Amino acid sequence: MIDIVAFIPRAIGQSVPLLLGCSGEILTEKSGNLNLGIPGVMYVGGISGVIGSFFYEQACVNKEMNPLLAILIPLLCSLVGSFIMGMIYCILTVSLRANQNVTGLAMTTFGVGIGNFFGGSLIKLSGADVPSIALSRTSGYFSKALPFAANLGWFGKIFLSYGFLCYLSFIIAIIAALVLYKTRAGLHLRAVGESPSTADAAGINVSKYKYVATCVGCMIAGLGGLYYVMDYASGVWSNDAFGDRGWLAIALVIFSIWNPLIGIFAAILFGGLYIVYLYIPTGMDYMEFKELYKMIPYVVTLFVLVLTSMRNKRENQPPASLGLSYFREER
Image (cartoon, rainbow, N blue to C red; front, top):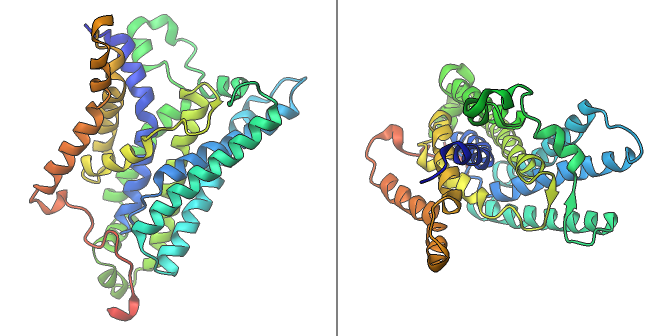
């Protein structure tokens, strides 16, 4: 039997990068931009936070760190780094009308390369004997749970044993849903994604909405990379350690039918599927089955993609102009 009390917190912890990447990509795709560069954005968000915290820890080697600065410096660095990635994508696809699919894939390659380059450079600066950086002092502030959680038994462990970025990810998803479906700005954004020519004729600034939605979406996704390093990985940065979480986050957008609220439950489900092989007893004689269990999230992803293609309801379909550059002269 699976130990539920131990399994659920790890599943939720695993789901946070997926949820942040999914929420950011939903905002981006609602504007009509298909950003396949989310894995690269998460890498840049993670390494930018690592750079900020690394130099702050170096400056505080022999003295106590300020808790507020220990959180704000990597947080702001992560937001700035992922914002720059969003701006690069928008300049190429919105202003220069480059192909969105090719641009997104190039951004993924570029972001992973940037992360590995600066990560390797910091490893050399730190003089570490292993190919990784440990920012345990900063990580302690990011992963700090509520002080009374340990006294509440299973309830505290399941609901209150997470760092602030975990709770922030759920708040961001809820706010994103409220903005999309309960505000005039969200209505305009959805109109831009469905028919930019019609939105333009109605006086909506198409380029502005695409820029804002994409850059904000990238900043949210970048926080997913920061969370993975500072909280889930306990402050340890290793090159190529993110795995395929960025791609799973993009798949979750389809699974959640472009709704951030559904994305919350989808992220937790996929987070659980991602680590379920660790909790299924197989015995030493059947270790090969664990490799099959690792395939579960990808098999489910393929199943979801097939199921989505069979949906007939319009509200379950992607924005009509998704992946298409807008040429105002063609109105």
